[in-house]
Image 1: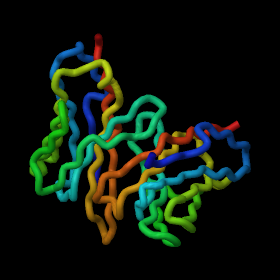
Image 2 (image 1 turned 180 degrees about the vertical axis):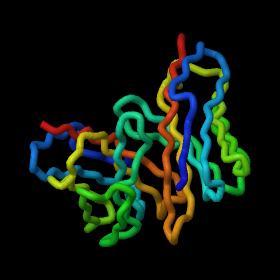
Image 3 (image 1 turned 180 degrees about the horizontal axis):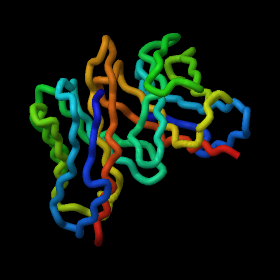
Length: 114
Length: 113
């Protein structure tokens, strides 16, 4: 059974710092991995999607990497801003018994301190 | 203005009552999904549909039902058989399947009276 872990559960950093969020998964046979952002009481917003054949994806100040062999992905946020404060979730898709299965991590709650 | 809408934002259910959560999208996506989010847990898939008039159970379908009569709409009914319905419910859609980027609605918070 695929398990997705995000540690730490919460992180606080001063504004302007670069930071890394971690995502670990137990089954390396994934189709892709997605990073999402969730603001309190709101839905999820897709940030980046990395296909299994890719090593990284970039969007603005965000860079996501994928290492399937070690079962890890990182989300790098450069020059953090207070508006980056949110919960960040990763999700992986595997193919299991004829079906695609999406598994989410529990998220890291990020607070950027002005 | 394209997107996914969910209504209501808050919903209260009495014991033994069935309630229906609405999800509508105008993105022309074939696939739609329902997730449940509980504190300290990741999102869990309840049901998904990849085409009109067809849907499949996710990991926690017991106590829930869905329909997909129109491409734009994927309502979720929380039945009285769902003994612990209090949660945040999220609807999502994607172009055709789980492998593509999912777009989420704003969510409905269901509370039991």
